[in-house]
Structure formats: C-alpha cells, structure tokens
Picture (tube, rainbow, N blue to C red):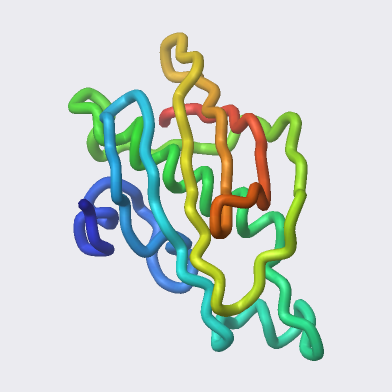
Length: 140
C-alpha cells in the first residue's frame, strides 16, 4: 500500500491537484488500484454545485489517469518522468459521485508501444460503476 508521500515520489502532482489518497494494489507497468475519499470541503464543490455538490467528471477522469500514471511511472526506466494525456476515449459517466463517497480507481495498461500507451480505467463507488474510459498517455 502506498500513501501520499510514496505516491508523490512517483508522480509530480501535489495538493490541491493530487486526486488520489492511496494506492492499494500496484503491478508496475501493468495496473494499479487506488482510492479518493470525497470530502465536502474540496474547492470544486463551492461552485459545482453549491446546493448539490457533485464531483466533476473531468476530475474523476484525472484521478483515474493519476492512478494509471502511478502504474506506468513505477517501472524503473520511467522513474522521474511524467505521463501526459494523449487522449480520452469511450468515457461513460454512470453514477453521481458526492461528498462522503469513497471512489475506487482502477487503471490497467492494455497497450504500450514505446512512450505511448493506453489504460482501461474504471471508477466505482460501493461496487457500482461511476466512470469508465480508455486513457491514452505519453511518457515524457
């Protein structure tokens, strides 16, 4: 299990844009599973939406990408590098995510050729799918 300090040794993201709290499972270069505990005091909820706080879909996609980045950047030859977005395909938003939810984030690397790859990403809350997507990354 990796906490925030260990995660920050792998990816460059920092507060307030580090969107994962811990990594529970890690197979370097293959897959990772992490969590984001959604709290009411997160800054996006002041405007999205004040009467009904909902986690923005783009931030859930970013959290999934960060978990995928942990998987791909934990490989020895990628240490110290950055994983950039190359594309988002087949994104589907199926469930609202709200304060109090514990978002489970899983990303499996399904293709990689050189510095470019694709991760199959799924976010769930209590076993129910919130988001699925294919995320293309480029290692730089």
